[in-house]
Image (cartoon, rainbow, N blue to C red; front, side, top):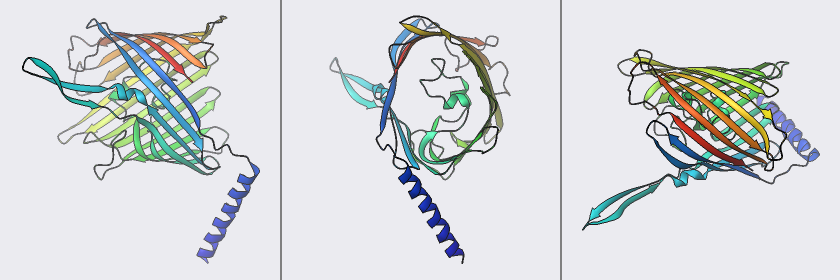
Length: 349
């Protein structure tokens, strides 16, 4: 009888999906979009600068059926990261080795939505951890992401399986749960361990959200647990947000804890001009403590920015950012960063 019941359930679900597909006209054509960011990056401590092609991304999205969708995101700027080695023979300099970073694949996944509000995703995705981490590169309000994205959080991308569900209740609650190889972007499994990530977002009020995040597993050969709490609020032209993250790393001899937090505010001033649509000043304050058991290794960063958004293109802006690092006492650790000025051009199509 159990087999009969299972067959009947599958049969009814199949008829429902087929009937739904017949009632709607599905657009199966892939959608293409992209963006590019170019920089002038001036190191104010070393008094040197360079020009950088930060991102050249091509996005392909689409539907294969009513319940199956896909997303592929390529960043072609990685192809410019070519390294060379030279040698000298007979007084002449010649090339001995050249290598190119072909790590161009970011998102690469297929999603299945078997029922309303549930999505199952398999492939390379952004780890569901931290609101700022999940913002697209062309949506972040500053040139650089917060410090904890690279110092405390997990790898931004990883390969695995993720389930996303929106609870059918009056207050919007979104839940993500994922399991990953744990080796990061474009890297195959090399051991028997898996990493995990969980994220819950609650939106109790219009424009206001609170998130709780966890990521854990083996990272860089050590067992790691990372916790994150975030909140954000948008009212009209004003956006304020912040997050706190704690990372516990278990070594063979001892454990240590890293702490980080940041908060920022952005205001969009609308301009009555044929050239500029918005002028958006922004400020962000950050704190990072790499190891709570050490003294005087923590530091802060203050970022002040100004973004000019234009009207005659689908999306384009010119942004300036000034980053000031503040170190405790006379700390001169190897992780010391330079103050910098960044001029950024961006376009999205």
